[in-house]
Image (cartoon, rainbow, N blue to C red; front, side, top):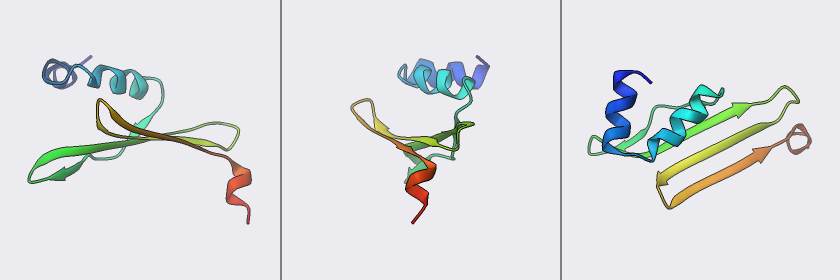
Length: 75
């Protein structure tokens, strides 16, 4: 964990879980901000089988997860 990650975890311990996901291949978009403060973190992981997992985090108790498969993209 680098110094920036450690400072973030010191301020918000729950972020350690997102860092673990990032280190496991997840990619995160720049956080959504309001008045200069982060209000949501969104990330995704693309898997070799053509499916994708996504996560949106607004708070430690407000998290959304979704899995999309190739079949869902075929209309």
